[in-house]
Length: 300
Ligand code: MG
Image 1: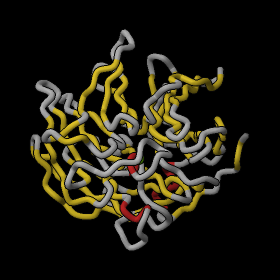
Image 2 (image 1 turned 45 degrees about the vertical axis):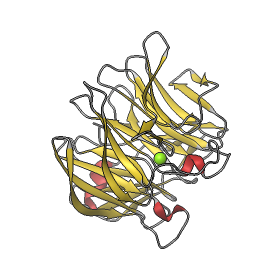
Image 3 (image 1 turned 30 degrees about the vertical axis):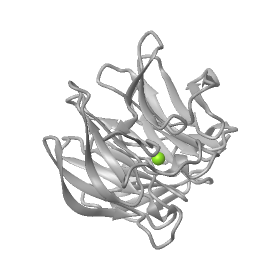
Image 4 (image 1 turned 180 degrees about the vertical axis):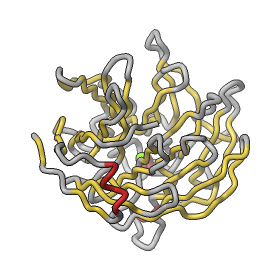
């Protein structure tokens, strides 16, 4: 099903990032909470999570959609490491895993300082092979997206896993609910969404920026705010624009934090990624559906 694309242009620069002769497509319908899209260029397919249904889905353009993994430990965010392997955040097991080439599962992180993680949500890999992930409490708030439990960690942190040693360090500890994260194209900055407003309206609904100093982060303040809903998953394109999920669609921000515009989507958006052979096709995880739209931008 194609939907006439309602763009909201807030700044003339947004027009250069969109295409007029394209439509928002509903690629698949039938999830309960779609999340974690990741593109595999070599396989030519997209994987994403359907958290409450405890499965991962696979979309092959011009072929169709099928179930990729039907016991997925309530997986949420997904990405690939520098060797192309699938990395997943799992609510059900409260861990970050890597799927090896032979299909076996390796645990990357499930504890910090001897205590179980809350429920890893989303992750990103730096060029040096380090894995950075967020650990809010969404997966332990109820039995719907995982298993209800009391948090063992004193904070909802952001963590870095060293690519060589596997050592885990907490790099952020002052978020209400850290969620999506993405590096700037030159990796000088890390953007991290705080979706704390999901359960309390006066809590954060913004994306903060950090300067990356080796293995440390230096707080650079609030980069931008979401005016409808919360920022969940985020992605950066090759020109440094930040594309964020929101309740009314996908919001696009300039590198200076100015909102340029929105791609309106008829369902609440939880996450997105760039895909396709040219990485110019935006895949949008929107509650029950997977949507896509071509844009005049390429994902990093
Ligand atoms: Mg998320």
